[in-house]
View (cartoon, rainbow, N blue to C red):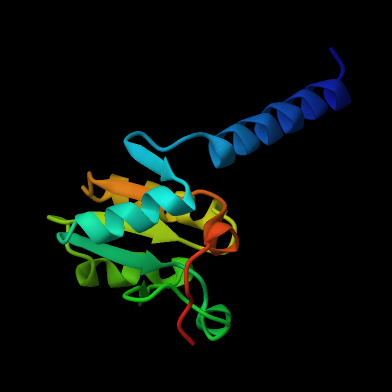
Length: 128
């Protein structure tokens, strides 16, 4: 096997691993549609709602009661998120909230759910 072929194989395997890891589900993470999230926010009083978008995005509107903890600062701000409550996450499209859930799960959070499709899928009112 020549050296270029071996390097190409390593690169392809690395890319496949990266993509699989990036899009793989998070163990224990529930995906909720907008109606399900709205119902759970009303019925479960023991929750915290986290908006993981950046502050500039939040200015465009956010779900009432949400706390803004940007994904880029999540690890530094874990102490602000109670681990004994249900944690609902959302972002713009659903990708960053999955990444946030992965971080939270690695840090002992167990009751995690996220808004599938992010705030773009939200049908309720937004605060500004």
